[in-house]
Image (cartoon, rainbow, N blue to C red):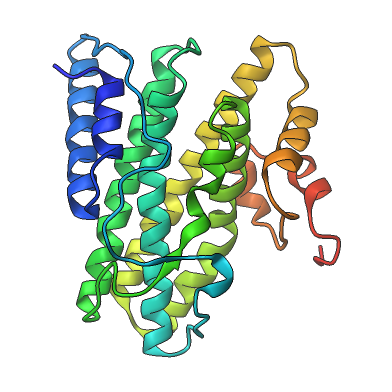
Length: 272
């Protein structure tokens, strides 16, 4: 039987998105079946790649070079879904990477339960959005994508607390801010399957942000650190730019992120 770390690396080294997410689902099912049976799949050790395997398409561009399309048109809505699919595929890898990357840090089994579940849900999200693209006669890989998505993982390759601060507590929290607006775009256009997919993503991403907050606070408690001060320091170290209001304060609070964590890091031009 594979160790959990070997499962993670198996996902990370698989290039095709549908195949990657099928492996992710399979390994998550094996993990939770063992947990339910009272058995333990060993964490083990495996070396994750610095960058996960990726398909030949989409072409990855500098963020400034990705074409901007207005979501009011069919082409713009396809571009928006394509960007979401790319985010979800990166999220699958981010959650498996945190499992294999930091095996030297001792955690209770709940840490692995949370990130395996998050990776499993992100795999579902990717496939839901791919299904939406295909229903609109497109596919993941049809358009260029953002090459900077993995930067947060590379920047925090040796810093677990930095990874937790920047990935779930900043980047995924941003998803809570912007997804309601995306849902409304597809609702107005009558694209019902995209509305349903995005509503699923919106509901489940709260949990992923919450996992980040929970384990960040766990590590701060272990080391007798002030979570808010450490969060501010880490975000200023690893996140490039200010956080952008408006914030979804209700959902962020539900995920364990109080306003005094993120407002002091906000773009001062954002209206409260």
